[in-house]
Amino acid sequence: MDDYGYGEAEQLTYQTVLAFARDRVAPGAAERDRTSAFDYALYGELGALGVPGMLYPESVGGTNASTLAFCLALEAISRVDMSLGWVLWVGAGGARSMLRGSDEQVAAWRERFVLPMVAGETVSAGGITEPDAGSDTAGIRTKAVRDGGEWVLNGSKIFISNAGLEHCAFVTALARTEDGFGLFVLPTGTPGYTMGPPLRKMGLHSADTRELSFADCRIPAYHLLESGGGGRQQVVGSGFALTRVYLASQAVGLAGECFDLSLEHARGRVAFKRKIGQFQHVQAMLVDMYLGLETGRLLRDRAARMSDARIPYIKEAALAKLHCTEMAKRAADMAVQVFGGLGYMDDTPVSRYYRDIRAATIAEGTSEIQKHIIAREIGALG
Ligand SMILES: Cc1cc2nc3c(=O)[nH]c(=O)nc-3n(C[C@H](O)[C@H](O)[C@H](O)COP(=O)(O)OP(=O)(O)OC[C@H]3O[C@@H](n4cnc5c(N)ncnc54)[C@H](O)[C@@H]3O)c2cc1C
Image (cartoon, rainbow, N blue to C red; front, side):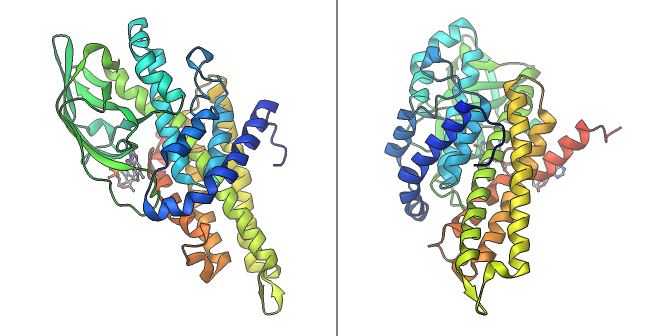
């Protein structure tokens, strides 16, 4: 990798995780895509490598790595398997907010939720989207009502990643409360918690996506993570900023692999007695990919570094998410083009990348929503 000013620990993380991705993740990625299977043993190996615990303190078995280092790990994995990277950042993120809870909460959740997640034995899911409320998160209808020492949740969620995985321990669910919104820790075995069959989708086949419904789900009062208006604000503000940088990192990884594969193909494939890389139209695609990647990396790195420095980065996260995911979508499209007919065949990785990346400009706030945020942050609304 060229010099982007990464520290020693960050470079080592990237190289270690990339070696793991090439050696252990890549060989089965096409087959997992074909069968929509999730490989629990492989996720366990990722846990043994310490990746799910990178963002957690040493006191719970984590390595206290920087956001940027975790982003580089995600980038490395997404070079070969976008589904696994998706499960990872959704799955390892949920318990982080638990560590910000009260002493009572942290003590109650440490053994049950945090330690197994850090070890890669369990994952979490995040339940925001509902059939009638996606971009407009304020329109959610799931309700939480206090009843003595418990909260009672009723409602439904849709397109929820990870929820159907056997080792999914809980969903952090956004619900309406009497005085605003709340973010709740809802364990997957709670009576009244049900899920639909896996949703069939265009790509990300080995990442699970479900509809959930909650019918009188009772959870202890301390399972409320954030209350009042703060619940929604936390999710749509700082929570989303971070996950947008994660998704931008997945996009940089996938686009990087599309570029490398396309370059290699352009240097070898012959047409009209010349290497196709000698044709200017093919060169233009390669240069477009390269430029998008370079600018995407800079935007992603800046947002991740601001997160590490605890500087507000809502705008920078939106810029990184918008640019990187749109850029990777184009890169995958151009990679299919550079490969010609071969690019359309499922035996070629770029065909899978083309399908997988399509979700990235929709989830965690669509591209249109990112533009709305950026417009607001640069003062365009007056
Ligand atoms: C693979 C995948 C995994 C997902 N995983 C999760 C998950 O784990 N948890 C979760 O909670 N959700 C998840 N989602 C849902 C995702 O966050 C929503 O799909 C997304 O926020 C968009 O909401 P929507 O689908 O309701 O679209 P809508 O909000 O109905 O939007 C439809 C169109 O209208 C546009 N639009 C809407 N409002 C505006 C506006 N104000 N200005 C301009 N354009 C606008 C949108 O940009 C879009 O083009 C996932 C989605 C996918 C595809």
